[in-house]
Image (cartoon, each protein chain N blue to C red):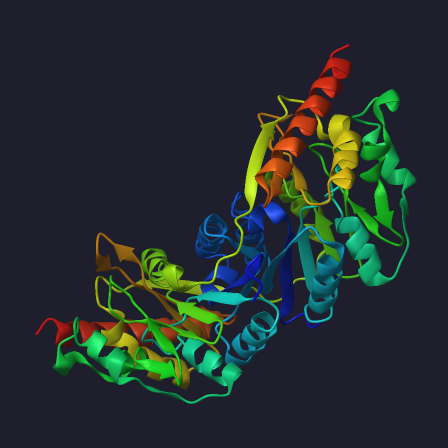
Length: 248
Length: 248
């Protein structure tokens, strides 16, 4: 794992996202959170609650990225099969974990610990638990895969639990420039030349329609503050020049 | 393409989503839209503005699903490289399309049609254009891949343009049951048995935390209204029974 650049994928598991019924807000939250601590999200996937799909996605992503953060599918109902899929992806057993049972018993009375609730204590062999301060049922961390709940507030608390233990890379710094109503087509040539001349800087142009008018932003991103600052100055000069020309 | 079941993947192309800067609202919109017209979204991916990533994702998804709907990366700036990636994935040339140039000239004065803006007229060989009633620059449709803009209002208009031409499957019908505060662990065993006894019905349980209390919903989905209705009745009876027990 290079400490210069640490990469991640987000894996959202859930039919409810794919059917369009529930809007996924977890992946955006995780990507933003990871960016703040120096981990770069390189891919996101949403797959259904089907074991073979989960296995395939976990294996595709864990071999490509430093970390995989999954959300969803770790509750007590029959459609919660993330632990099964992850255990199978790693080729390890899935068994009831006494540590997890103890956590569940902090919230659930012993006589209410039925078969379904015990499902939440099934943890792949060799995994560490991820704390759930809200409803106790833990997530887990196996290899480079971190398995979290789908309920946003619980997922967020779990991310706070694992964050201190993650290897971080150099944070990507960013600057946003407003183009003050200049159309993309007016500055695209200049921006492309700047991007080509400074390959260490990732430059994006993001159009937004507001009341029928494009309001665009340019985002410059780099790990080195000096290089980023130089790029920002060049971009500003380019925009000023285009703007003067555009208003002639 | 089976007309019983038509599947799709959504492919979102854009560094701004992966950095957490911009929240992707397109994939949820597309999934919900497709579900309404009888197309089942089976996977979503977000990849960066990098040609090899786009090629790999397009090829992985177009061979697995009936349709792929992509959003983002078809503007005039250097980071808009979706057309390049899609052309490469299909192994076809990418050239300026006179039909697309004509569309651009409906909005852009000939003297303003610079090199950057002409980029928006580059269409993979053999593709059909997708109309953009808002800002004219078209999307395109090649094979089973439909390439749309990233700006939500434009993407939505493009989806309206292609929708009548898509092959549709039988619509998945759904019913939502409120569990009136029953915890998942209380009904999970009964729900699992129901799911097992009616494999034609896809049953999910979705917890939501509201003011520290779980408010759960059960969603039942099937293509046959009679089967769905029978499952709903069984689920209601099961919940009533659990509820009576739970309140004792």
